[in-house]
Image (cartoon, rainbow, N blue to C red; front, side, top):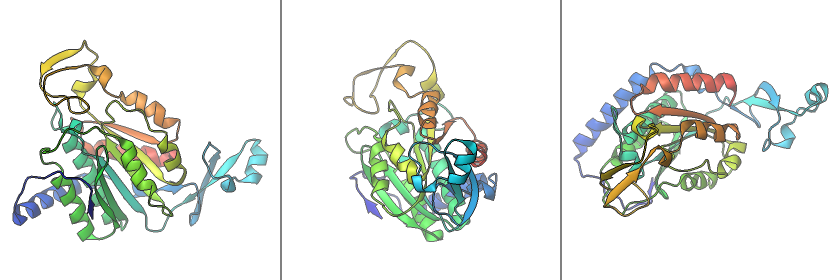
Length: 299
């Protein structure tokens, strides 16, 4: 594991850490019980082991995967989709920037993100996949290379818990490109990627177009209902989470937050599936529905 930041999590004893990891795993396993094993069946445009289906060609698909016979019959280019049956590598890229610590619902955005990541981590390990983890803000703060087994699951859950401690460093902005570029550096591999963030005031990075060409990518947007209220600007004393001085009067409104519909529309143009999950939502049911839809839609 590599740790690229100088954040200092709150110090806790080994027994307490093990206890917290076990509680997180138990909660995640309860969620996993609601997911069907088949939901992890993933398709790639590329060299798989079993033909799955064909679909229309979209920009960025490998030209060598074009099914020329089918394309000639239908008079428009189609590509062959293969099903990936060998052990997959699942990467969870979780935003732990300051804006994720806010929340006015049942839990904070970060707690919701940890719940999502832990559920996906347990599910991946249980079906024999290799699990990797990136924690990022304006840069990658910690990285766990993909491996399989229960020890890897423990390390991933421990790392998630470590980075839910209060921040003891200057405020940093969130930049999804830091995680995207870190993943791109792992060349020669194909990943199932879940990018988990509130996508605060960020458009979908164009970098995702290149990532999507080789990998199976999903964007999981954690939203707080308060942030989505269409209202006049609000003024209150405090500190904005990112991008401004740490104290003073904060002025905010719903315009400051990325609308789930806007994110979905931008991602759809890149054939990337998105899920907007509220801090009040039940993670298991929302994630299960999303994975079933993703599987049936072939994205």
